Amino acid sequence: MGSSDIEEILARLAADAELRARFVENPFALGRELGLSPTRTRQLRREAAARFDSFDATPRERRFMQVNKLLPLTHNVLKERFTHYFDAYVAEHGGVAIERLFGDVLRFAEYLEEKLREDYLGSGWTLDLLRFETARVKAADPNRRLVVAAFRHDISRLVRGVARKDAMFEAIVRRSVAVWWRRRPHAPVRYAVFAAPRLRRG
Image 1 (cartoon, rainbow, N blue to C red):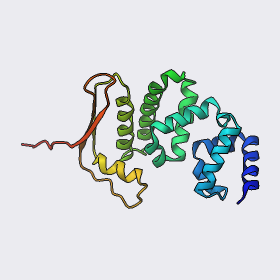
Image 2: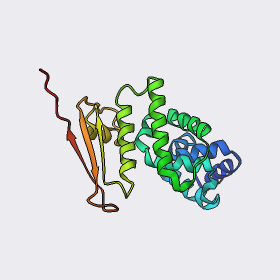
Image 3: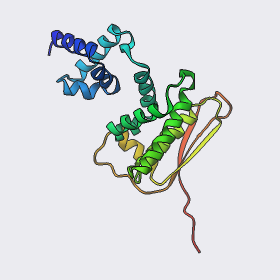
Image 4: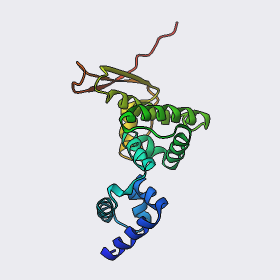
């Protein structure tokens, strides 16, 4: 596929807002669908960004990109359902100022957890993954000193498996606790995971 084909795809993106939104949300998936290699997709993305003024993203698209940037593993697992729930959230809650982005992402994560429970899609490890990324967003607040989150599964193994897109990984049911902390506000954040203690009965 040569430069003429890249130009043809750029013309299609310019004329088709839906196709453009799909490319913004997942450029490599659409690139594969259009017959592009990862290298050519990266080239297309660079040329599109230069040509369309930050890719002519709508407020919804920019908001989606930011949410996806902060909840990437959950998005990778839910795929189209993530987009479906995001659009439903935007329809219900309207726009958001960029300075309130982190709060908006946390509200969306809360909304998403509720919807996953309602639709019986989060009964396994998906909810743990969402909780992990939600806690990580909270810990990114430079004024937070401590964030603690508990999980039903071995969260380190789960995160590594999803990040590697390893189809063979197994989500181990082994309670764990993740801790993010700062010595003082705005200091570098530290992170550790511990096995949760088992409570003895009797």
